[in-house]
Image (cartoon, rainbow, N blue to C red):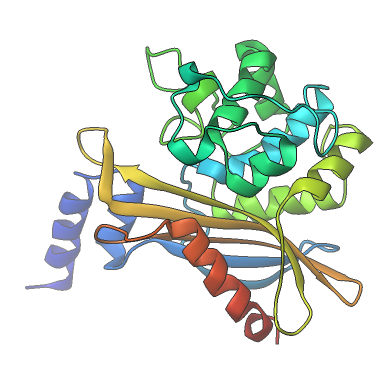
Length: 271
């Protein structure tokens, strides 16, 4: 078989899938990326993989949503508001509890995110996403379902690439986003913090979800994981994004798995 015929067949197969699946079919491997930027200059210090491909942000959206919540005065400080769980939220069992902003980020509580967006309202929420220039800036949700406030970032309309994730965090660190000083400071204070063995202090948010199948529903054999944030050591700051699409049913959430690997590998990546 000639190289041209083989490529045409790959393109035909790829056309049956979503953009992320098409990329995988054409490249012969699952999409993944690690990108690290110098926070001061924006220079790429490390970049490997499908870093320009856009995917749903899932729980990494809690980072920009914290900025929005504080800027809009819906969130007040690290422990206020302190919202009680309600049965109509229909949350998983571990999230049926009272939650404040710090717990929200630490435990990735979806109903708390939806309470923030509900208080914003559709127009204001969409305006914030566009003002922050976050990914494709599409907060509309699924066509005809009017669910942008609850689902835009979850296997729906809002998508962002690893390159854009790392660049967004950098814009936050150097305060180039159109939000208040309080929003910057409080968001930085509530993002979960970790440490590596050689002194890097890492601030980051995981995200876990799935790619859609051809029926539009979650393909449980195509898990998507994120770890996005920034790290500091010896007066040096970097921003980063790691993303990977898995194959086969995942035995554990993909985001925390990527976080563990990134924390272990960061010292070597920065040599």
